[in-house]
Amino acid sequence: MRAIIKGILLFLNIFICIGVLTVTRSILVLFTIKRKFLVSYIVHLFGKIFTLILGIKVKVSGEKSLLKKRGVLFVSNHLSYIDGIVMTSLSPLVFIGRSDLRFWPLFGLFSFLSYTIFVNRNSPLNIQKEIGRIVSFLKDKVNVVLFPEGTSSEGTRLLAFRSSFFVAPLEAKSPTVCLAIKYKKINSEDINDKNKDLVYWYGDMNFFPHLLGVLKLEEILVEVNVCGALEDLEIKDKSTSLQRKYLCDACQKVIEYHLGYGKSPSRNGN
Image 1 (tube, rainbow, N blue to C red):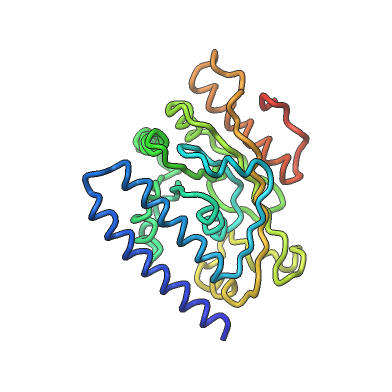
Image 2: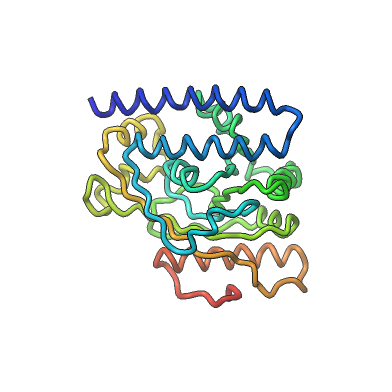
């Protein structure tokens, strides 16, 4: 019964959000910058509703004030589609998502209307256009979330970060803020190897059966550590290619440390 009620509330609110986004984008068709931010803010408000419906409790630690800034590239580890719900509840933002997401039933339309920046990580042909879109959002003071692992993982380690999109904050002259997301408890039980797949979504897991399992849960406790802004890296005298790789490596080290996977990074990312 819990899953049925939560499912009805979740999909009802998704439909309402789609309606609100459609109207907003239509009314503000000539006001691009305002439209972008307002769309991200609407999704932010509905993100709070989605976390309430799904019983997701988010504990934020670290430099929380950075979540209120605009025009930030947020960089995070990736464990599940639930990450996206958590992120939208924290700050107005848009996502960088894989290109096939736009063809998902219902969720593809929602992603399109919420200005998800669709990318094809397996094809370099459109990468400059994709980077240009990210730069455009950042310059318009709209926050963007990047999951640089390129996919979700089982949570025992970070996958190698892909550096291509780290050129965007350099071109936009925007701050880069690292976020470390941890799932702490499921139904008041500490997360462990036996229950983690109730919330982690990775590999060949099917989406809708997994979502049904999430709807059956009573409570999910998530901790998000705002690790700080990487703005003082000593890379200005290096080529753009080296700068993005340096920034990418620095972000991976910072997030690894806050997840407990690595040693403490220095202030300049070394």
